[in-house]
Image 1 (cartoon, rainbow, N blue to C red):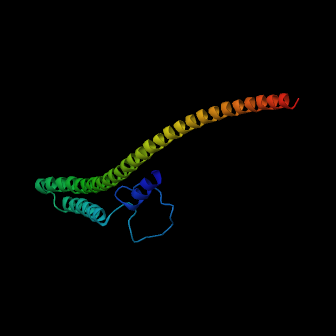
Image 2: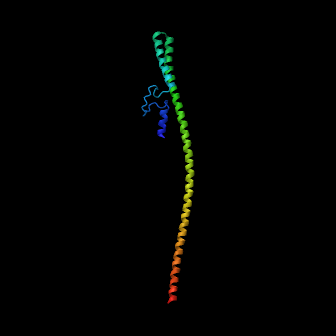
Image 3: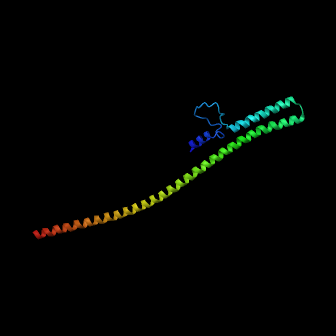
Length: 163
């Protein structure tokens, strides 16, 4: 289960931040731990902050400064929210997969419970058969003893007749 979870986390970049990849694929084209949407939002946030700083340095007015400060706050906040949303989507996917696994385990558990009941019934039948065999063995032992006694008596009677 742990291996499957790690594999899932590695496959979903929104969740995989901080997990070391053992595969040395050297994919320089992709940003590690970011989807293209996250990269876009992060780039736009950086661009917004830089353009706000540039506007503030060029135009020294109160209105421009207020708008620039708002842009410097809103841009990164939007990027952070998008990251959280993509993490949430990945967690929802993982939850669905885990529910599916739970259903599989539940059905397997039910099958095992049925097999366990069948085995218990089989054990009970075997116990009854053992008891029956014990009774038969005891009876055969007694019958054998009786036959031996009768045979000895017959031999004695035969010896008396011969004498």
